[in-house]
Image (cartoon, rainbow, N blue to C red; front, side):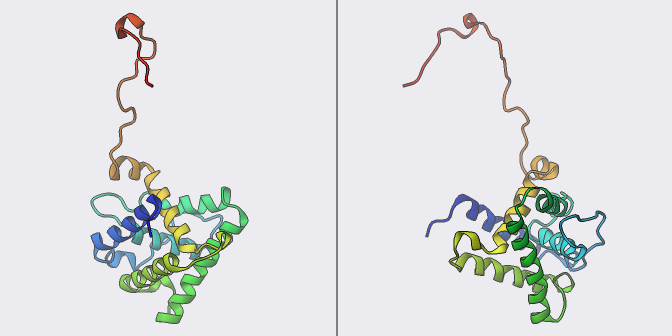
Length: 188
């Protein structure tokens, strides 16, 4: 089975983020208090998104998802851009994450150790890649991974620190006389 470019990037981002930090360190186990007010997510869901985003793209020598404002991006996307069904699928998935964490380890996801958190995320990733579902019944985890990735790489730190940023790739000379260019050219 061939992977799409999106699936390959998502898998690499998730795998690299986990390997680069040795399960993201103890700092991820303690969900910091929110410095912002969620509008589409409950405060508990927002803290969960905060921890998961930082596990997927942790702070290394570049800013992590938390520092890039990814949790706020996800909340804003749910509030302003997602249709009701998509937003509900993600919220239900977040609620499922807490329920699964309680069932497996006796506490909510954000209170688990980083290793326990990564084990659950890896299970969701595996489950989503092996489940065959109808188009309207996608697993919630690829949606969450996509939001984290898009939110990170479209943020200022993601676009300018994690990626090479060239605001104008080359000089633009708009009104150049034909005499300076020489003969015109065409392609077949």
